[in-house]
Amino acid sequence: MTERLILAAVREALNNPHENRELIKSLVQMLSIIYEEILTPPGTWVSVDDRLPPASETCYLLACQAHDSNRKFHALSHRDDRGYWRGIHYDLQVTHWTVPPALPRDKD
Image 1: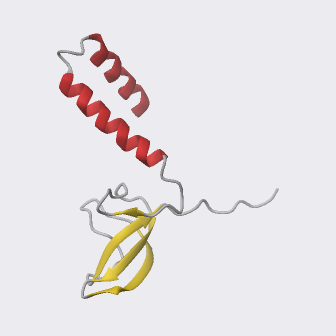
Image 2 (image 1 turned 30 degrees about the vertical axis):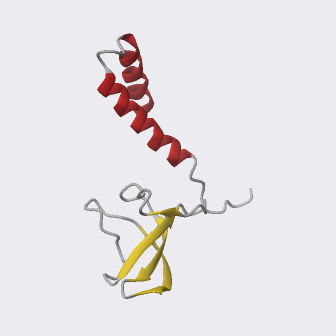
């Protein structure tokens, strides 16, 4: 569904590029986000300064204590709809996240 909407918007923008500059800018931004998400394989750590995972997507976190950045912790969590990390102590500052690997499959 999303792909169809993007393609329809691209077609519309290309029909009259001079009048659709803002639409083209928005499409380029949207496509760059999709491109980054596709190219973030499991195990690749992403700084929260660069981007955040989508809300409700489970991910591994790397965090440090707010008063001692040398103490590192990791956790499995997700962000809620308000952007808060669930199950993380308020004294921890999340610095990086990564997509967890796929679960193992049973052999047939």
